[in-house]
Length: 330
Image (cartoon, rainbow, N blue to C red; front, side):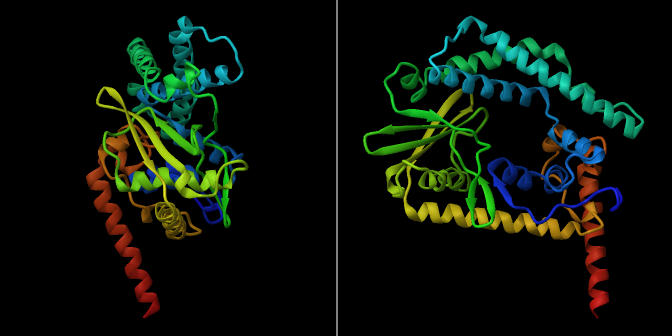
């Protein structure tokens, strides 16, 4: 990759939970996905598409999430929802995503001159099983509170929102919006659901969810008092949906904002490490091989073949560059 082919973006100005997660799991994947500014140029468009590549299991999760949102949209519009079409809706979403990703694999193979390892992952013979799993999770979530109460009309004041919605914090665009908002008495509930999560809520994830209160306080018609919000998460783990809820307070909201600014500082640090020459050898690799297995860059990234060896080599290159800089200063 030469500097005349790639233009590095200005300092990062967007924060979201997904970006934060990717940065923590694999800084190099984060750089390749979000670090280039000319999105419409041929090379960078292919780079973005490769970064967006996902394994069938992840495509199933996206399809499930999309169908759940579609169900709520029909409720808001008072449209007819045909339950017997559920499996075909999910199947259509998964197949459509797989077909779109075939062109990505073609580009990778044309650049590497060999068969991509991603083709072995994109086997369609597991499609029926993926649809079955998604349908099971869908029917399960429809029995969970508050979903069942909304569907049955027991909760009347509610709405859905897009996670792509931006909230301005200083000069940063942050994606903080919940999936579902509803009112109970004088309290407003902000809920995000995760199609794959964990049973326990870690402190960092707790703060990620508390950041939704910042969004709420900036919305017209919602209270400015942090204590009037209950933050919730509905996530699938260990064969069932797990519901977590906690009332917000100003201290937790302030801590969430501090976390966001720390994350932006880490993103800027990665930006500066890469430098104008786009030196990827200065960017750390994935934290585990499991992350590499589901990454679209596994054919072209050193970690895709041998993560342990590549991480050692990357550390050596990073130390060598640091030594050169020290010598220049001396």
